[in-house]
Amino acid sequence: MEEGFFTRVYQIVERIPPGKVATYGQVAFLAGSPRAARAVGEAMRRCPYFEVPCHRVLNRRGELSPAPAFGGPGVQQGRLEAEGVAVGPDNRVDLTQFQWDGK
DNA sequence: ATATTGACGGGCA
DNA sequence: GTGCCCGCCAATA
Image 1 (cartoon, rainbow, N blue to C red):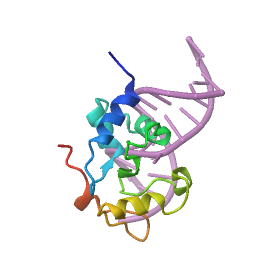
Image 2: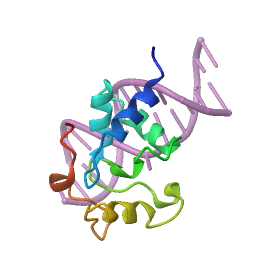
Image 3: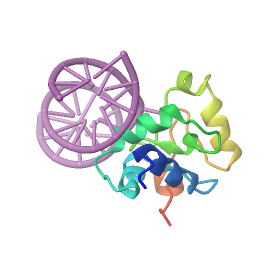
Image 4: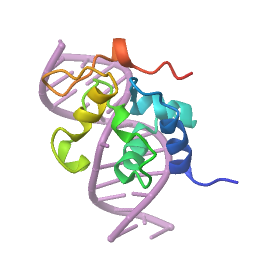
C-alpha cells in the first residue's frame, strides 16, 4: 500500500518534535531515499496539510526556506522562535543545537 | 512516453 | 567559512 513518496515524507515531518528542526537530507534518509532531498523539498513546498510542520525542515546549512513560499517574510522564523528555536540574523538556525536526532 | 523543474546535498576552490 | 559545479530523486507539463 504505497501512498506515494510524499505521504511518507509528511509522516516523518510530523514526527519532528517542537523546538527541533530537521534537514531535507535527513528527512529523505528517513523516507528511505537518502539522495532524495530534492524530492523532499517538493513535498514541503506542497505541504497539503497544515498538520505538517514544514517550517521545521531546513536545508543543510540551517537556512530557512524562501519567505515568499511561506506566505510572507518572517512567517517561518516566527513559528520556529515560538517553539523555542533560535533563528539567527541571516535566517539561520544552529543545527548543532536544534537538529532533530531522528528518534 | 520524454523533458524540464525544484523549499537539495556533497565535494572542491 | 562561503561559493560554484555536478549529481540525485520525484513530480509536473
